[in-house]
Length: 232
Image 1 (cartoon, rainbow, N blue to C red):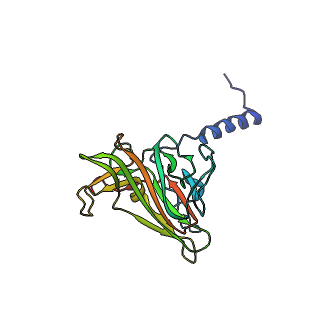
Image 2: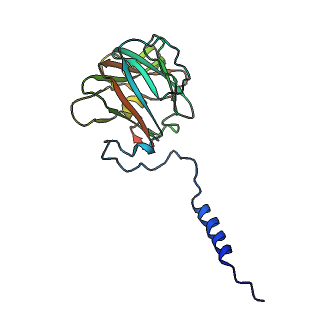
Image 3: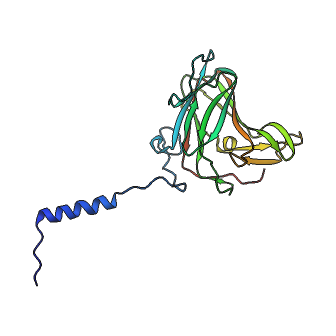
């Protein structure tokens, strides 16, 4: 029995369906391959491929308005002096309190970077300093609670300083310093234990931002695994 010859319209419809099936997308996985580096920005990938990005903005005077849940992708810190950014675990990246200039500090939500406790994170953190040259800031991660029998606030011995020098903006990979806290428990200045972000639910996590005139630092989160290791 002969089958009718398909018309051009039928063939076009079948082709459209096939192309649609090939172009279906899925939600981003934790094992996404890193994007190709962007030579123009110095970042490890095109900014459009970042999981999240926000600006850390140094201001001369503390903010007096309520900046909780205002959905702005920026965090205000003191232009000179200390600021605290408290960290909260969540499924998505989000700034929940953009005012880190007061005593309460800001609040940033981000996913567990190493949910399987392998020592390798599924994303990385990069800082790019922009704007008028001048200023620098030291970034440190801290935990508060009881660690191996000692109670208090422990700030990492792994710190990183970023600065806005003259010329093209520079980029720093700050994944190790901001996604883990390397704790000195005996006061000898040497790391005794490395704690990944959100590994211990009994601890409170925060970033310490000590600013010396840096006005704008851009924070990028790329789906690029970082092999840090579990040991100090």
